Image (cartoon, rainbow, N blue to C red):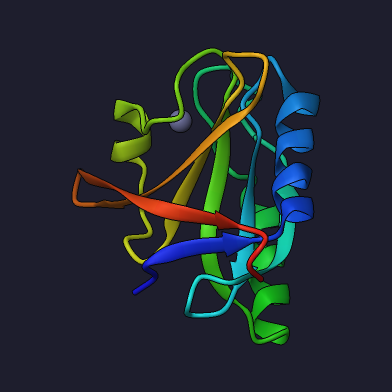
Length: 137
Ligand SMILES: [Zn+2]
């Protein structure tokens, strides 16, 4: 089980840029890495619902990403999405749709000038925050 999420500043900036580009819609994507939570690749994905209040990954794109991860021997480290107008905390809908108990959920809030990010594990509606370490991969 991943104790913290470790990614480079450039990887985090790529996530922030995607979130900003998709605003006012929620942005989403996948961080692929190893079992220890070290991110190796960032997949920027489309919010199939084009909604500003929730996100759904495009199922075909998700299949392709999972396929590519498997081919490259990568694990699902985190699923990320943005909150254009609300804090970086899982919404009731996020908890309801958290289908990957082994994954980390990274949420980016754009409600202030500077993007804010927090990472969580969501298991059976129980939310616990985990540490994000930037610049240690
Ligand atoms: Zn959300």
